[in-house]
Amino acid sequence: MIEVKSISKNFGEVQAVKEVTFTAPDSQVTALLGANGAGKTTSLRMIYSLITPESGEILIDGIDPKKEPERARKLLGVLPDTRGLYKRLSARENIEYFGKLHGMTDEKIKSRTDSLVADLRMEDFIDRKTDGFSQGQRVKVAIARALVHDPQNIILDEPTNGLDVMSTRGVRAFLMKEKERGKCILFSSHVMQEVAAVSDEILIVNDGIICASGSESELKQQTGKENLEDAFVHIVTNGEGHE
Image (tube, rainbow, N blue to C red; front, side, top):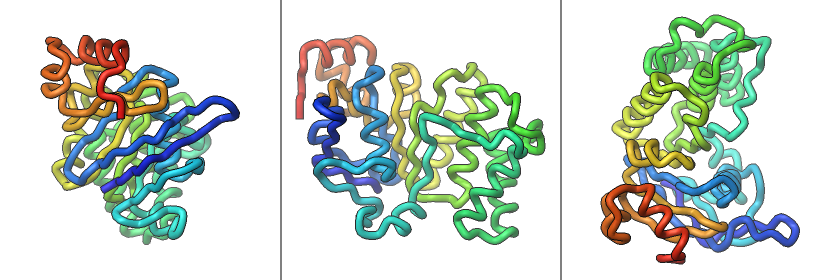
């Protein structure tokens, strides 16, 4: 479970995130939905300790990353907005390298890699160098690399951005399987269809704040709209539900 309590972040005179508070529980997919520049990525970066909040508190399964950073990191698997694969290494070698960074044994790395290859359908390219990979292949390798240590909490920044239909469906199916395993999944997106397809709880982010939250059906009911896109536009335009 990820708990976020009144986190804020400034970049110079720009307040990118303003007193954001929410909880992402286990066995649930929680989505941050907002336009580019709304504060989604900044919020996620604070949660996985890439940047430090100006104020507020973050707990990862009850652990404060400021006080116990190593313990908190072991509980997180992160797909950042930049995938950053090592192009001279094969997909398998990229995954194995991260497994070793997490202190896993060779046997455990192999077992977990084999499982991820099957789940993400990477059999055709797992032993190829990642230089020249398609966007879908890169994302799948980056997800596998991030989750090789089987963390309880999964953070994904725009996981299907730029993917074709089949790759998107594959990533979506994988996330649902992880949810069924009891994992906490938190992801950001600006794609309404993607959010509607996988999310249990949707947090609408606009101008650095969470201005509404609920399931897709709850947000449609709150706004009187027939689809999530119309509900989203209504909320961010009218500023309803500011927290």
